[in-house]
Length: 484
Ligand code: NAD
Image (tube, rainbow, N blue to C red; front, side, top):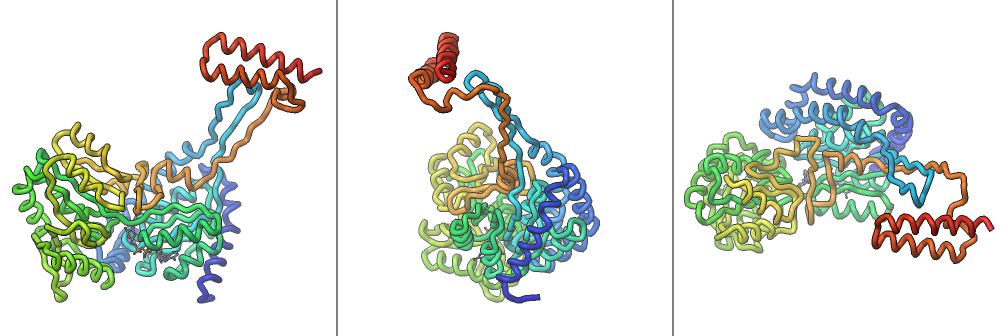
């Protein structure tokens, strides 16, 4: 096999392209049936997959199951049950008075070949969020897994390929392979990864006229109000900071606490983080650890303090870290750290807490922790982000009906939900005209056509029965003019 990324990418796209028409020609119910069988085949090897994920990512077995393997069954079940309805043709509305005899139907058709470029932090659940709805919609998929977790990606594609054939194709390799995949000309790119790479992918797609969906980095904030259930909130926020060792695009990296509760909440958060330490693994690569260490050292150098944890090169794994008194321009506050670290700040009232949470160029998720539903809703409405969780954080990524999405530097994409399926397919319009007469707007133009247009505008302005009667009269006059 060629080691040239361009040749490999072209070959992967060509194989997928060749397989796609026959797959798209199947009834959607048949595609759903085959996807169910493929999903079950994966689930029957659940333990093998979970162990492989643990080996490659170091995440605890419990998380390999909860955030990766379990999602396979849920995704397949959801899309096979609800996807066919979402893909069903819909009747388009055509006004009968002005445009008689016309029937419009909007079909959802596949885009063709979908390139799925994935990161390493959730090497199975993230690509599956794209692969399953894309296939159900009649597309073929080329998966380019992260070079840091190549075996999980390869395992997944092999398992699906065994049941479905070349409509699921693997492209192995690093960033060069990802870039070559875009150059090979797929019909849609679904990219999940860092904001920096996402920008490059967006430019490459724009140059080739390829639509792309970008799911990028995050810097989520948890807002802790003075009426929250303190113990549960401390446990939940600790989980939000530390799950997957903080290598989660919607991990809590900033905690904005109401001044009125800080003296009670902060010690409980520290205790919850310290208790969780035994379940927090080492970061996936030394490079990832170096980013976290750099952010923490920089903050400490500028007067910040650690409320728990320490930076020591000999500590394996890196312990949970909670920073306070971090300057607002420090990378620990502004940039994605992607590790078991959060910055704590305090706010005097709800408005200040919202301003702190919104002080980010990212905008993936945020959470509000409060015992007052109205107050939490009011804050949620002011947060600049794609997802807000009240009294929880991040868990909804596992729910296929709910959109996963962000704003700002977190990207423009949507995965999961009918919105994602809408991007993976295109609307194709078919309008059948049963009108046997010429249309009033056809040639030759004349005074009566202009009069008809004026009457139609007047009808839009005022409506009512009188306007409809005037429209009918103007239409008749125009048809008479046309037939002269
Ligand atoms: P990354 O951007 O380094 O790599 C992501 C993928 O892009 C990899 O497969 C990589 O090989 C490929 N790639 C690299 N250069 C490329 C190029 N020029 N063209 C095409 N593909 C290229 O990201 P990462 O370190 O693997 O993942 C961590 C990042 O992903 C974090 O920023 C995290 O927040 C983000 N992420 C976002 C979401 C989300 O849903 N918003 C989910 C998970 C991870």
